[in-house]
Length: 350
Image (cartoon, rainbow, N blue to C red; front, side, top):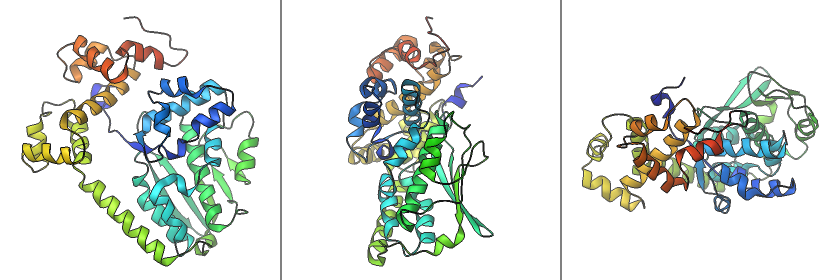
């Protein structure tokens, strides 16, 4: 059984870009996307701008719902087929102009956090082969198999952008169990796929790393390298980003006051208010966001009583928590829980 502290893990976000085609794919499979997206606590408006950031857990929940509603066991591959380097924002765009494939993959591995804070890339070379791996580190993520299909699929698409459309890996590693029909995987990767692997990666000859992309442009690469460095520095300096980290760490502690957090950030309370205003937000808005995300995670564990969640999130009682949750989501905590329970769990009435 999870404790309340274990439930309040750090919130990771991801740009919606790799999921931008979810509504279209659902329509092609004969389903109305609006109710499915709504069940993931998202709206179709989230898919209007590729730069929109959503929580990694919400994105994973959406993929789980897509598979459950459509029965398509390779939904992640359908998304990957529409993706590529451009799906990954500035970090992906810059690699098109890299002087060689090695530089491109190292740059994307270093900058992936600008796009995705829920997973990481690892590039490793051993003997004559190189492995480019994606690993999820966000707790409570759902649809792990679909996330890995999507991520490893995009890796493959990127290599075809850099090395030519006929490029194929030596081997594809996926930790998922094989679907009943592996045709989609075989056709997409055009290479042997090893299911139930300990890793999620593409494996290819290390000689590919020295290949020079046709789109190589040293001037443009240097420009985007500077831009990504600026983005990384801004993210590290962002008062909002720092505040979120402290709120997440202090959410269940006695230290959740703006005065205490301002001191931890090394500034006066008035300064913190001013900087947050400059970034278009407020302490209360950020606190509400972090509380809402934590509440969803806690509600996802049916062993957590609503009254216990209310106390953990520092509400005076369950009624006050219920009012706040309904303001955030449009429904009560129990309605949200019943709507998001796995199909074999059954509704909660208490």
